[in-house]
Amino acid sequence: MSRYEVSPRLSRGEHYGRVVTHRDAAGLRLTELHHTRPELLPEHTHECAHFWLLLSGAFQDHLGSKVRPYRPFSFGYYPGELEQQDEFGRDGARFFTIELDAQWAQMVADLNRPMSAEPADLNDTLAFRAMLQLHSKFLHARDGGYDVDCFAAESLTAECIGYAFEPRSRPAQRQPRWLGPVMQFLDEYYTRPFRISTLAACAGVHPVHLARVFREVHRCSIAQYQTALRIRRACSLLGVSDLTLSQIALQTGFADQSHFTRAFTATTGCPPGEFRRTVFPRVRADEPSDEIRHFPDYDDRVHSSRSA
Image (cartoon, rainbow, N blue to C red; front, top):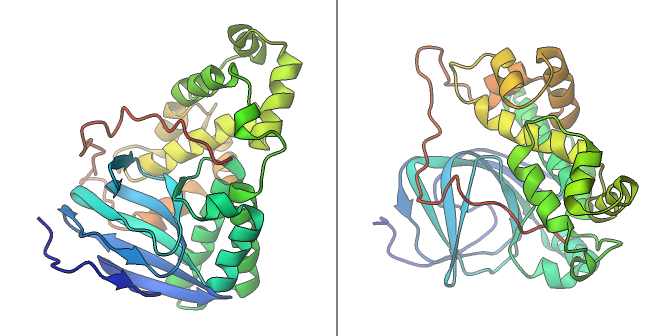
């Protein structure tokens, strides 16, 4: 049961949970937020539209009759004034959030007005990269005791908005049916090596056609998409203290630690060792943190919805 008895409208900077630290930059409020225990929050709204990145723990949102569970390093968008109810698992949850002022929210609406008014799971590879790099800038500012560079915050947030919300050259309703099974294959077997010819044969299309349509829809190559899935998983595994970087590299499908380090740094803006120290500072070698499912379908859910 929640300890809250009211269903408030939360203004900019107000959150349930504990605000560890925040930084303001260029109309944005960047916040590190911890929910330290399991609970179901009351229904509430936020004044500001915001992006969120789940760093650790278990979280699911209740939007009307729909319940959506999320795994660590899922990220999404909530419009302002959305009626929502959040639930946290046994160990709570940790978030990085980006609240948008009215000017930023209007930028989202200008790009994609229908999508700007709806909550969204975001799966765009390039938006994810921008989100992680902004988080890295935030952590450096937090640990150094200084402000986030406004230009960096503006640039990376604009990238995130653009990649997540700008209409695709091939709208969702015109995406070929064969692409769905391809995406399911990638989401399930991203750690394994495979040939594009094999993937194309399974889809029943020519490899060149597969590569061209994939880039039209996702604005990245199949290899880049696979790498982003591997990095997302690696981010979670870095919180498991009894795994070395070499072990994480092998578990996520990289050839070796060097390959993993190069890809991770290019995506997040910092090496994996530094990421582990800053994002999971309390991890100790003799105190591994687990990734036990805290909701019934926590690990079974496949994020099939794509930003369109």
